[in-house]
Every structure is written in C-alpha cells, then in structure tokens.
Length: 170
Image (cartoon, rainbow, N blue to C red; front, side, top):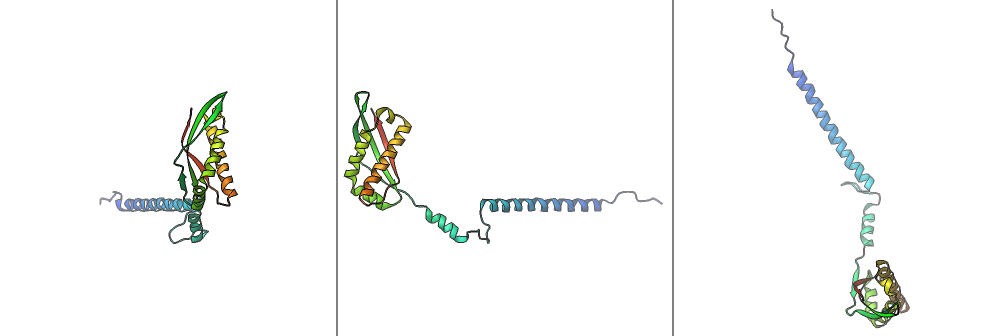
C-alpha cells in the first residue's frame, strides 16, 4: 500500500501562530514598561496613582507662580551724557515689572521722585558704555537699584525689574 509521506501542515501553522502571539505580547509588555519607567523617572504619576507629594505638591507648584504686572512710563527720560568732552543725548522709555501690584501702585505714587533719580542715574552713565549691550544691562540694574532704594525708603514693596521699551543715544 501507499504510505502517506506528505508532512502534516497543521502543526507547523499552530507553532508559528504561538510564536507570533508571544512576540506581540513581549513587544506590548516592553512598551508598557518603557512608558511606566519614563513616567517614574520624570516624576509623573499614572492615572489612579498618586505621586510622592500627592495633590499638595501640584498645588504648591501652581501657587508659587505669580504673574507679572507692568507700569509703563509714558514720558521718556531725556538727559545729556558726556562723551570725550562733547555733549550727547540719551532718551529712554521705561517699564517696571513687579509680581506685587502694590509695588507698582507705590511706584506710580512716588513717580516724580523716581523719575528724578532715574534721570540722574542715566546722566551719570558713560556714553561709550551705553552703546554696548553690557552697558545697557548695567544701566538697567543700576536703575532697578535706584527705584528699589526709593521705594524702600518710603516703606513700600520693591519692583522686580526695569525694562527698556526704547533706548536711543546720539
């Protein structure tokens, strides 16, 4: 009689199907572990799980942010600056930044004194130095110190920064 020598195809397909299913499960498991590991290293939290700080840590981070408010000086500060025996002019439009609105209200109240002190600070600057970015940053720091000294003398809260809106020297 004739023997059946053809290989049985069904067991090969069954073994291949198991291999594919196992590979898919391993890949999905690797992706899930990667996401969980990344969240853990970055300090994030998974849905249903609380981070180490719980809800209080997120609230504290949100409470620490305070938006800035600004006071723009409408009129420019204009003064002469000495440069190698020659008179030059400097014109600066300023804005003041603070996180405390009371500081800007105090600056608005004492604006005549602040403007006078700022004009003197600008007039005492060197013309060559005002033409460099470092010199303008130094002037902004000097003006911040001047404004905060005036506000401190009056017992008011201080401002955060002095910003140049427009800066011209000629």
